[in-house]
Image (cartoon, rainbow, N blue to C red; front, top):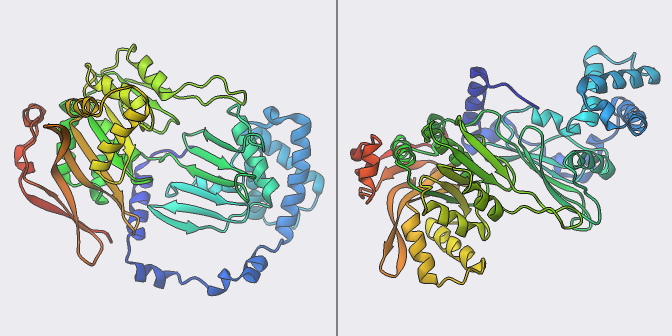
Amino acid sequence: MAIPETPDLRRLLASSWRSRRAPLDERLRRRRPDPAIARPEARDRQRRVGPFERLRRRAFGNLLADVERLGLGELAEPEAARGEVRRVLAELGDTEALSVDDRRRLEDELVAEVCGFGPLDRLFADPTVSDILVNGPGEVWVDRFGRLEPTELRFDDSDHLMRLLGRLVAAHGRRLDEASPSVDVRLPGGSRLHAIIPPLSAVPVVSIRRLRVVPFRPEELCDCGTLSPEMTAFLAAVMAGRLNVVISGGAASGKTTLLNVLTRFIPPGERVVTIEETAELELAHPHVVALEARLPNIEGRGEVTLRHLVRNALRMRPDRIIVGEVRGPEVFDMLQAMNTGHEGSLTTVHANSPEDALRRIENLVLMGGFGLPSRAIRELLGATLHVMVHLQRFLDGTRRVTSVREVLWQGDGVSTRELFRFEPAAGQAGGRHQACGATPSFLPRLELAGFDAALLAGGGTASGGAG
């Protein structure tokens, strides 16, 4: 569901983020959960089917019969689906007792079942939701600003959830059944859906990573404490100076978000090629070519790997290559591209620290079976990579850049020199971003891009955790 970007929407996101950063005891005072909700009998009472729900299920059953008769193609557009919904409701004749608002809500829910996201439709209309997690038909959670929250949304049963999943994946030529019990697809609008069903799980489980409606700006990452202004100026100069960058961090630590923000500093006259398994990047750049890998079909044919795309990208006259995430042998081709005239390229890697990220990249090359000795791989890393940026997601849900380092080749191995770091506050939320006082070897390239070397001197910028 498309949501237009407006200044009001940005203010809504900012105010919602600040409310989530309130101290824990204050949030608990605001909304104290009822302990009875945790009891199974209380949940059963809450989910008891009322008159509205019975009418919705009857109408939904009749609508499914019409979908089988007409086909989804005839009802793919919301207006066509709404017309069919109104006809079904008129045939039932039980809607006179409904208020105008209830009737409109009933129509909206049924239209969402035919051409939307079913019960999840209202979550796709909420710009503060970043992840939607369905743990079976009776349990739906969301992630808002790094914190998980339960919702009151429910599916009728597992069949209801499976019908929605079947329709969503069929639009991509995929299937979800016992023979193919897991799937990963990109939804309309850019969100990414991963689903796994029995026998691999007890109930259908769905994880949806939503594409942010309003892309982050650098100043917004500074406001929420992910970056400091000094870090931002440094990374802007790194991008303008065409230095190769690896962004590392754990799952959901903000790697893709930071990657999107850094691309804002790429000069507009350059050609950028992006390569991803599932398209998530939204670059604010005038000249972007987006490539996306393809999984094999049910017969095991037609697969297009990231490595294949990286090698093809080299023939497309790119100034920079951006690989959304390296996790296999494509890392070797990425390093080769960075070292053969495509400076200023970026990628991300899952790791718990910058040192772990370097070791993981080395291990990925070794696992690719290229037959290179470890020393040759480390020399390639030292000659190719310039900057490591590491992010961490903290217990309160905040995501911060905890270290910015220069990659160095020294003797027989690769090492790093820390340029910026985040110092957590002792015994409380928040902390401080500060420069470490080190001078990188590539400082002349940064100064040509207009960087002020005084920002590398010691000192820090406070970053509050509670807002």
